[in-house]
Amino acid sequence: MAKGQVPIIYLILTIAIAFVLAAGVFLFARVLGNNISGDLAEVGLDSVGQQLENSFLDLKIMADGTNESSVNMTIKIPKQIGEQRYFIAGHNSRIIELRTTGNPSIPKNLEMKFWPDLKVNGFVDSSQGFIEMQLNDSNKILIK
Image 1 (cartoon, helix red, strand yellow):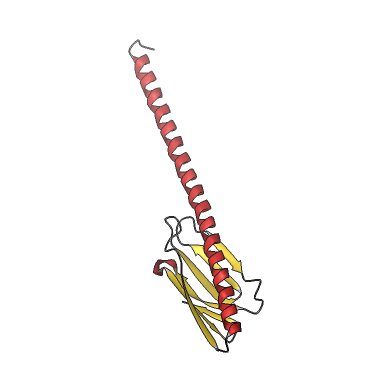
Image 2 (image 1 turned 135 degrees about the vertical axis):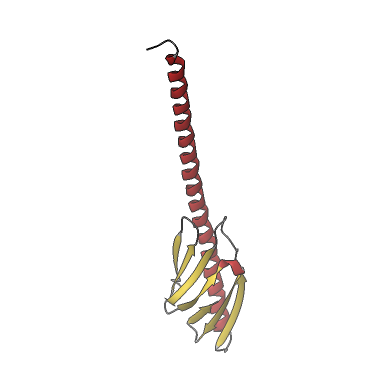
């Protein structure tokens, strides 16, 4: 090997190692960000789910205390969990789906065990910041 080629080879190796290290740091930061985002979304969905469960219980108590055939309630919800929007959906059962819309999309199914014959219908996007709930016929809740 010629005398002038050794420094060039060392320079090329140094640059290659720098690129490998930069790529490793970038990938590590990206994976860490996704994990934190997913954990934050799960905690946020749990919190919203607990708020919904408490509101449904309040709605049931209000309906049992009156002779009305329809009882309405509106609650505020966060517009985002972290940086992600989410939605709440009922599909004619007592299980309510909560799901973030970003990447990663985190699903959570919330079952209203305290109300066996409950049927929840409707869809709410979190960007509106509130949920309107209407209880009809003592076991059907429309969310909008």
